[in-house]
Image (cartoon, rainbow, N blue to C red; front, side):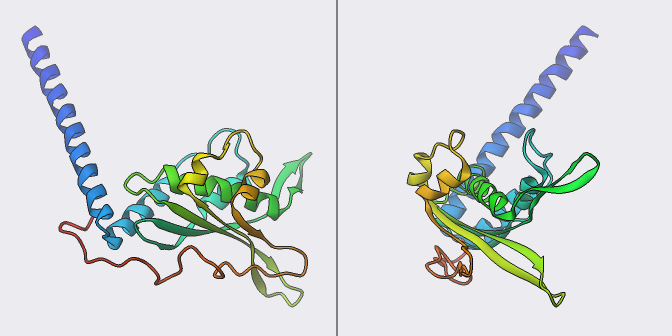
Length: 215
């Protein structure tokens, strides 16, 4: 029995070791493919990462409105060095004393979500390393005639170098955005996120698919 137990342990250790080594080689391969400019593989990796985020449990302390905003992320465009996503936010509504009340406007939620989303794109996409990202935050509301309207509340861009200097955990979202290239909607104004966009749909560094360029 002891010998059998030793054999089982050895086999399990070998299997785990093989899985770890295989995973490391696979990650290295796909990073190389993306670095060579295979946009299809990049988009697949990005969508897979965002889908993984959507399946996660919300971290302790995050507001439901912020979490829903993060989960709403949609890729607008991306290439090897740049990534742009849009998010949809709503006012921070909570149940207080048995009643649902708004404790924060959509603008505040948009600021927090934009900062958190940029953090994810720069540091939490396993196979990609973007040098700059853009986040466009929208909100929806009912117009007086009953139609659903969508407005852009803010758009922000940040480079990796600037992000590395950001005090992510020590500054409020509004203070962080003030150090980035940010435009926010003001009364009577409209934000067009396409104006001066980091990257637009159909605008990217195209390259032929690398060998093995499918996840």
